[in-house]
Amino acid sequence: MADLDLALDLARVRAEFPALGSDFAFFDNAGGSQTLRGVADRVRDYLLTSNVQLGASYEVSRAAGARVAAAVAGAAAYVHAASPDEIVLGPSTTQLLANLALAMRTWLRPGDEVVVSRAEHEANAGPWCRLAAATGAVVRWWPLDPVTLRLEPHGLAPLLGPRTRLVAFTHASNLLGTIHDVAGLTALAHGAGARVVVDGVAYAPHRAIDVRAWDVDAYVFSAYKVYGPHLAVLYGKRDLLAPLPGINHDFIGRDQLAYKLQPGNLNFELAHGLGGVFAYVDDLGGPAAAFARIAAHEEALAAPLLAWLRDAPGVRVLGEATADRARRVPTISFTVAGRRPEDVVRVVDGHRVGIRHGDFYARRLVEDLGLADAGGVIRASMVHYNTHDEVARLIEALAAALR
Ligand SMILES: Cc1ncc(COP(=O)(O)O)c(C=O)c1O
Image 1 (cartoon, rainbow, N blue to C red):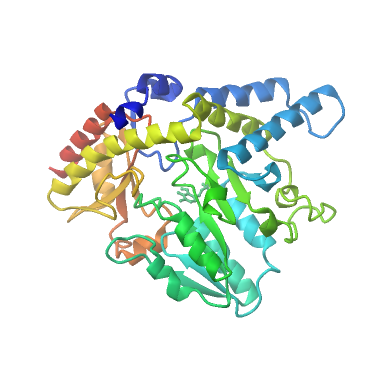
Image 2 (image 1 turned 135 degrees about the vertical axis):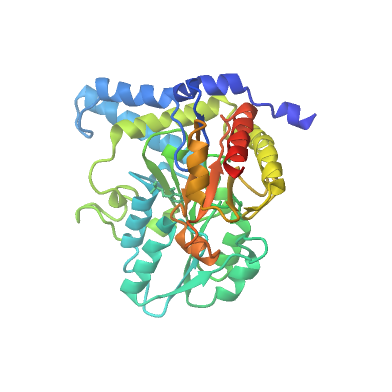
């Protein structure tokens, strides 16, 4: 009964994504999702009706400024931030985290410690390694549990100490799809007096975000993987951002929390476009209801693929082998004994089914798994607009590739 309440109107969903009109099956969604019509319409409308510089007193500039401000306010509401000035927009997650680390350059002292997980996309590892190298701080690597391939509290606890200033980890692995307990891990890090920076990129397309419930200090996601444009959103808790020097012009005050971290103009048209994502989620019932439906549908999509992979000879699913929506998002990586990932993917390409191979910039994880020389993994990543028919086509294509 419960799942009936969670039914997703797939015809209605797919009608919002013009790219789904062809017979191509998109299973590289963790690389980039398809874009909502409403997002594209808003980008076009911004460019054609309000493409002026912000901050002037004339009418069109005020209207453009109001559009961008609405996008920022929408993002704040979407992640449940306390205030819009805790929202920093930028071109990508990689850039936003690099900017944040740059702003934190006077924040660390020699001998301070930074904990970084081995599951990270490089976007949430490299900046902290460079920051540590520049300040004389020490990086402590947080390994995944060797059995569950999860970031667990028992892996983090021994790394925390009086010098730990920062803990950086991913909410969901972009390779394994495993969901980590952000609230629990954050509480553990806070108990040691450390700040927490979470990469939400692989999680955000699948679940609602609540930075206040989780109490994270910074959280970031990329809108182009959440049905939007090439733009990223960083939430920074006020008391983390307030004391930081900016990376913008020197005369931009420290009290201008977001502006000091946004050098140069924002991409205004994409910021306005982002509002189309929030409108879509609202149309599906608001974040809580929409993502409850999305999670149920995604679990139902992942189950047959995982079942098939579990039974396929020579196939090894990495990480969580069940479709349980509490434990994973439907980003599924696997290897095939004796086959290079690229060779398998090339066969699947011929079936008009888009999957992908490689390390997905989670290079340290792929090295730790001993798969770097073997060409990484094969990854099929689904989102809520995928259908059961498409999953069947993917399985057929994989079966052909493995024959
Ligand atoms: C988990 C994760 N973090 C960060 C990134 C980088 O995002 P961006 O392309 O916006 O820099 C990606 C991109 O694939 C990702 O999957």
